[in-house]
Amino acid sequence: MNYISPKYSLLLSFLLMVTSYVQAQPLPVVVKTYGEHYAGQIAYHHQVTNNGSRDVVGIAIGLDTDDQGSDHPATREQGELNFVMPKGAELCNPKINPASISGPTGWTAQVIQIEHTGCYLQWSRPKYPKSGIQVGQTLNFSVTVPQYAQEYIAGHFSAAYPVDGGPRYFNGAMELLDKVPPILTVTLTPSTVRENDKLVPITATISVKDDYDPLPEIKLESITANEVLEASDIRDASFGTDDRQFLLKAEHEERNTTARVYMVVYSATDASGNQSLASATVTVQEEERMHEDHRDKENKKSGKD
Image (cartoon, rainbow, N blue to C red; front, side, top):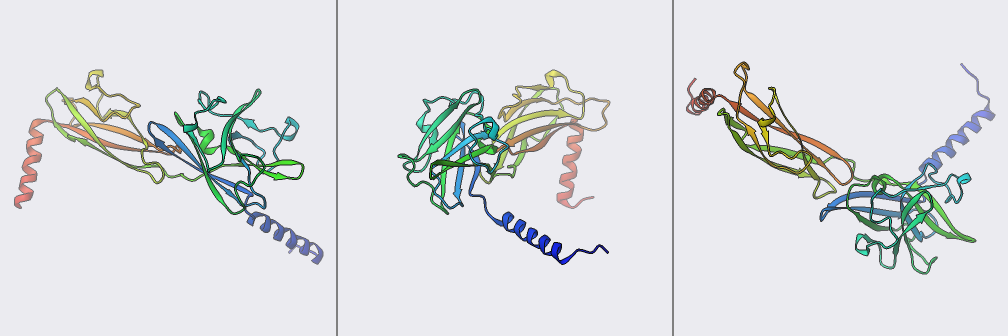
């Protein structure tokens, strides 16, 4: 058994107590995010909570940094933030569309261009440094962009608060609220077709539900089968889009002792980047087999063996 002197035992207890205390303290500023599809675009929402001891008078998003929790770095030696907004985003332009950005009453938004490092989106109180997000308060901010952009949902933020001698900053990682994929179900009609070597119209009925996003993006991912397919066996199917109607050939290889089964796979992706897959099948049966299945069903209904 190793012996620990009372002196070091007391020191160890003190260090453990300090560590537990530090871990229990909330971050000065917390930014929680989620996205939702809206009018053909994606709206990203940011819930900013001030847990510190001073009012927050500015909040910036679209950042990437490895220097979480430090003061706002102004030089490379201090661990400069990488100010990066999504490529192609129209917001990376000082003349932003006011309809695409919203915040609390009295707050203004602008895109800040940083030489050689890109740009970022910043909200601030007018007549700085008047009070902004008060201690213990949560305010909501949002930005709408044409397509999914990870920087808005899982990037970093910088919160400004006034102190003597000028503003100071707290940098941190945004917390994603929506981490659960959508619930997706797919039904194909008809699900069983008679073999006649013709193209049969198939319609997909899709049900999707998500905790945060009312309209997750639906895509037809693939159509496969348990037999080798010819190019002409699948028609009018637009993969990678929300295509719910296509044609499948009601054909069956004679050497295959089982029916041809098409498997159709769809995906649902919410605006926070969570994705789920669901599939349904279409079975091509020989006419004789279909008659046998029908007779079996009728016999079960009538109680016959």
